Image 1 (cartoon, one colour):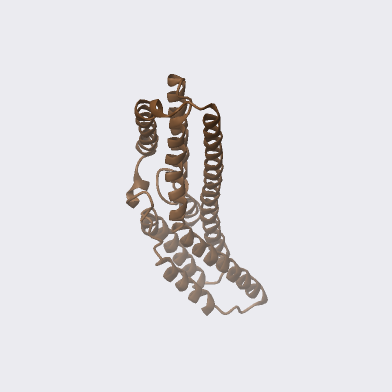
Image 2: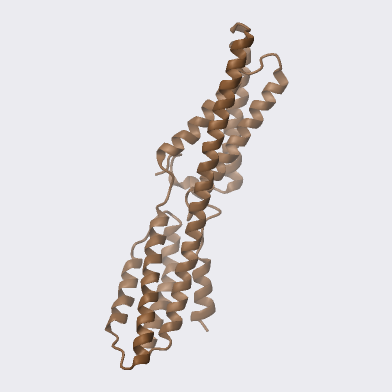
Length: 266
């Protein structure tokens, strides 16, 4: 459940979602400005000092909202980037582990490589479609546990095998940590209170501009309209990056596909 409604909002095309958000705020700005100028401003006493104080208040609101919204956007982009790096690292560890077990004696080598191929294929074909629907799909733990048990059963018979086995166990530990980090990233999202600020902060900030400059009708309407479109664009960008594994710009399974096709199918 997301603050903006059903989770399928993340499955909408940006061609649909972006204009919808911008249009909604622009419509609010256009109608609100027109109604305020028609029914409210004519009855407000023209007072220069009061008008100046209102301008200063609106400027403060816009600066505060713009600053906080941009900070949230930057934080959301950082989370998105971290999720992308997490996926790349996990895929790299799978590939590295696959190379390391290739130096194991038979039959351990074939068993471990087969299990790693199955794990990579599982991530691509089974886990990832569910991840893209917002499900961490913790069955991946079971796959890793089977690989871990197989590694722990292996007993090195030479010093060279012992060194290789220790290195392989270290690689597996990094892989396991990366897998859990990726699972946690699937559930990453902005807290509801942040979305409350983003949405209602935009409405309050745009609404405050309805009372500006009653004598410059055309310029006033343009200012409010363009400001609302800018805020709509910021909200769209935050929403697009809020769930790293959802939506049009989601983090995909391409790193795993490269490892599977480029290394495991040779």
